[in-house]
Amino acid sequence: MRATAEPTSGGRKIPGGGSGSAWSVEPCADVRKEPSGLLLAAEVEAMIVDLDETLEQYVQQLVSTGRYNNASEVIREALRLKIQADEEHAARLEALKRDVTHAREQVRRGEVVETCLEAFLNRSRG
Image 1 (cartoon, rainbow, N blue to C red):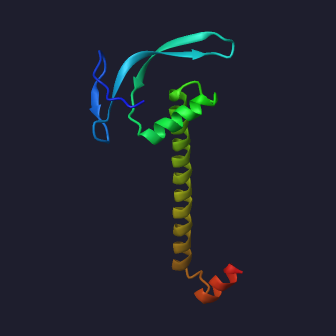
Image 2: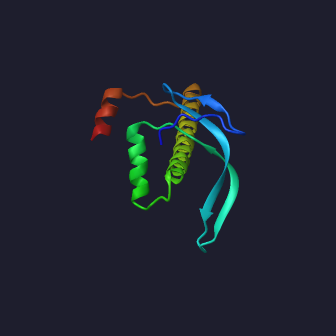
Image 3: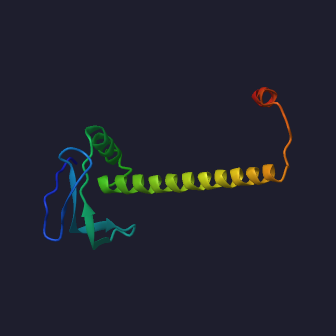
């Protein structure tokens, strides 16, 4: 999976993050097997990515288990999971911001209870 891509017709070479790493976008045929056994091919753009040895071995290990048909499936699922994690993180952050805003409004309105922080923390530690 280590590859430094060369431009091909319709593709372009773009510097990557590491030394000597790069990726390119080039047209290729994506062949998928439907549950019915029918093979479908579609013209799509492929991305060649540079993985370090640890990631490459992990991808190969996942493919060898039979859970994935190829490295592309592993990468697609990894990206879907990253998107999901990012969305969940953003939702938690927004909820926290709403809670802080609500708490500030309560303080502004004088809706507070004086308490000893140390006593509160001791009670919450149980």
